[in-house]
Picture 1: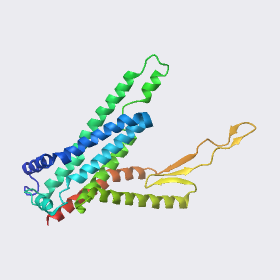
Picture 2: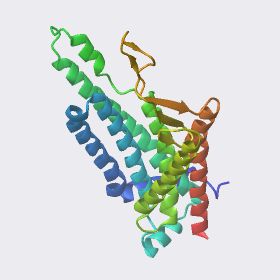
Picture 3: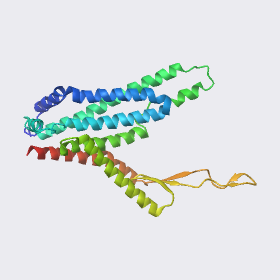
Picture 4: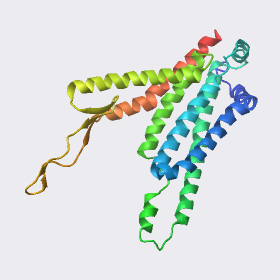
Amino acid sequence: MNNTFNFKRFSWIFRKTILERPVQILGIIILNFILVLLLYSFMREIIGWDATQNLTFLWGFVFGGCYLSAAVFNYFSTNANGSSYLTLPCSALEKWVCAILIAGVLYTISFLLFFKAMDAAFVSYYHQLLDPKEVNYLSKMEAVQPFDLNGHVAKTTYRMYGVLVSAMMVGSLYFNKLSFIKTGLIICLVFGLLFVVNLGVANIFFNDVNDAFPFSHVSLHLPSAGVVQESNILIRPMNEEAGIELPQPYQSIFKVFIQYVLAAMLCVTAYIRLREKEF
């Protein structure tokens, strides 16, 4: 067990990874924070507060984490760097845990703290600019609230983050050059294929399908409501779109599979691939 994992060796490889490439590791994190701050600052007046909060959280958390994950194992672009990394006096498990800790734990904590502080500062500043004497003062206060890190958008982003970051880690070990771009293209291809297949199956069973998200829901177009002219009564509610969701407990099973099982499988695949490279 000492040859597999030793805390002293692990702390050494962890410090080496951070301190040897501070521009690549810390630079990615800081640059991503700056971009999120700029996007948040300029897009509030264009698309509104809610959309800005959702977009910047999703983009900053997922994209930044994916890029960092691809950079953690970015030693194999040249044979010299790859050989030097593989011959370090530490086990594959210690290298793998180091990558998981940087991309999965440290980045997650740092981004959530940064986004929470940034969002709270912007919202608080906006509330201070409001005039309490305005008639719609309370409605404006209630319309702009801090982003909910336990809300639906945040939970969906967490599921995406776990799968995509794990996939990027696997891709960085299979592709020696341009791993971020190549893995991203494969992810888009797989998702696009699932979407097309799911949309095709939905069109077999339903008419006027709007979209069909894999293993989640199907959206249907509904004709506009008719009106009885004499009495001005709607013969059906004014709904132009209806959704069919995956029933319980299958929806919960799907969410658990994506958030935990699939992400864990990809992380284990990354470890197996790292072991293969050492032999």
